[in-house]
Image 1 (tube, one colour):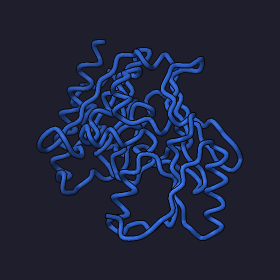
Image 2 (tube, rainbow, N blue to C red; image 1 turned 60 degrees about the vertical axis):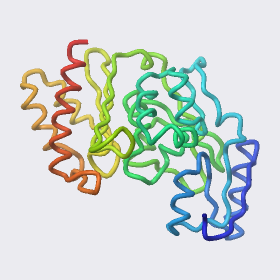
Image 3 (cartoon, rainbow, N blue to C red; image 1 turned 45 degrees about the vertical axis):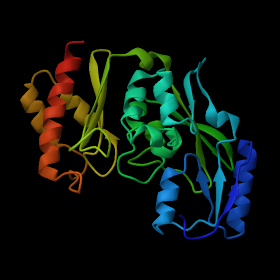
Image 4 (spheres, rainbow, N blue to C red; image 1 turned 180 degrees about the vertical axis):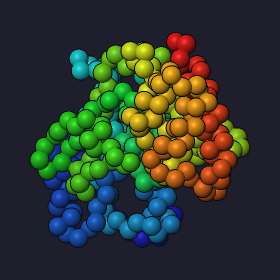
Length: 277
């Protein structure tokens, strides 16, 4: 149970959502945009956040799109992870989404909620980073389309009154050779020790990580190492560990040493399976 009262709004258009959010800000309501809501509810129950109003985005038609259009695969921010997996229009994204939480939770967790959340893992973003997807952002200045690498830098860099409306992924990425691993300490549900997503484009392996550091990431430096055939695979893996962008996580899911051990094994599996494809 959430230990405070708040106002709930469910606008039916992008313009109404933005205007309502701005109005609530002027009223001192500290509003939040709301899609799946699982993280907001959890944080509110723990008194980590105290919004006096939430603006639910699920009634906006554009936020529920899941189809291949002229520009590529368009996914609305309010599409659930379960729907992504069932559609399988982007197999790598479907597999990454299927690894998040359990089925009941995935029915509620949305793509936008996962990508824009505050928890470390945000695994659904990994395939989008690899595919150089575009992010459709709505805000007071209208709708803009931004390359993912310009707006996702360890986390989504949105203004408070902006929200993620859609993602767009070019068709060519939907059928490329790919692989996904999620390694947990125990069982098949829960946060990862290590999640690795990778695909192969023009004989080059692209690779992205979650659970390794305190944020999901794709690193061009690491990809250069992965694709350096002059080095043995063992040498490449050692160099990757040295070139991680931040310290390896050390938490209740697993120690930094154990995570590093799992990461090395996962990198070996990933590269071995993709190099021959």
